[in-house]
Image 1: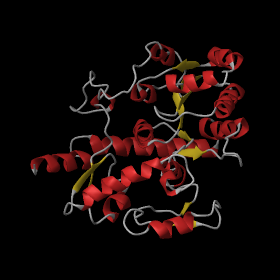
Image 2: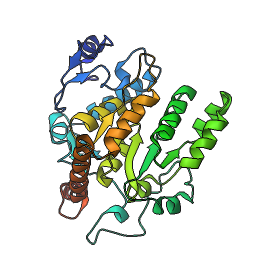
Image 3: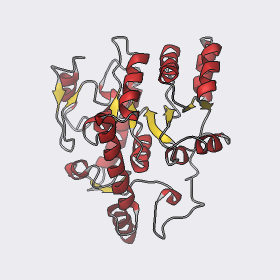
Length: 325
């Protein structure tokens, strides 16, 4: 809609940074979106707004075709309204796109098929044994993807929240993030404390981590791949969005699929340690909120895997698409 004549309307409604007075409702999304929920490309002052021309060019190419087919990494029961709301395109859900080793049953499962070979970095090796030694549902997995670089202040708030909470964690800190921290004089004392409680790695196989029984929750930037992988593994989320579509994904996680909680930043845009710990407490512990989140996570895990199995909606959609080629 933003790239098809509604740019000014959306900008006008989202122009105020006030979550209470400005909101929009779009076809295909079953909820109201406040300014904190819409993709960052709609924010003219956002430093990451350079991506808007890329998306605009993509839609220009699609508009040259008559009813183009678009394969989407989602599944029908997850986003039924979204798949049907854009009449100009034939949106075909073929997700969740996961290696067959992580399917629970059926002849589609291949134990050797653990990766699509698309990892940007080489995984560490020793974290798997470390995870296998941890109790069920005890570990917090922290990863912000391959692109995002957090400020030193935000990284320290996360670190101190993990120490305050006291549960084991696996934290992916990429070389890109590490290099940025070293320029700002990394707090080596804090890192030493963290490594006594948890494990810090430069990269890992995310599906292998999320499918490990030790997983208790995923503190995630809510990139779409990470969100979908967490759903299909049944892992509750602490949503920590940064840019692009991540803010909308976090809204869906918290208010539609109800498989996690979204952190709230302070007026300076920093999520403080007490807020992070609050969300970890609610998601990980045995209270009413945590139990509901885990029930919902298990539900979406089952639905996602059913879609990918033989006879499932995504399996049939992709088979039909191939037969038309």
